[in-house]
Length: 252
Image (cartoon, rainbow, N blue to C red; front, side, top):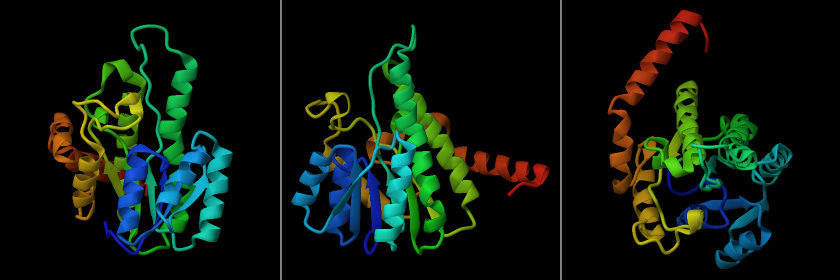
């Protein structure tokens, strides 16, 4: 990914990984627009980063997504990078009766949100040079954490969706990237002080190094052991499978 001269929209940019990514990209000379539900958090970020912009967005609300997309296209017509970062994570009990509110909110935010956000902007992004759609998934997409089984399953679904979308956009100018963090010191599960979690600044530094390459998957060193769990030839297998399917069904 080209690391400067972009107009970048980042969901969940008011805290944690989203804020840190926004600040790192802002410092490199990109025009950065962050989004989130909490206006106070957004105001704090843009106050600390003069020149950064913010809009309110609830990725669990399709009407909010559609409003945000219209605003972005109208006010930031050069937008060429979307980073779907917003997400929620809670402990659950997949060995018993599931809390339906937790189930619905997690799937709506973590899976439907990024799919809808990308859908709302994809035709615009197809018209731009150096266009990128990125998704923040997790190493839990590859190795689920059983006590957050629903969260882990949404990240596995995001990974699957990324593979499909990357394939379907292969002949366009839009690159599809997946950022798969390990455990990082953020607000998720109140991990800010967790000694075993990766320091946020270290994660961002390593992530930015990989982001500036041609890699489709943005993996820091500590994430690679989890990614390897699914086997080294996943992309080749998935692409070959889809080429055969297109030949069979005559689609795309």
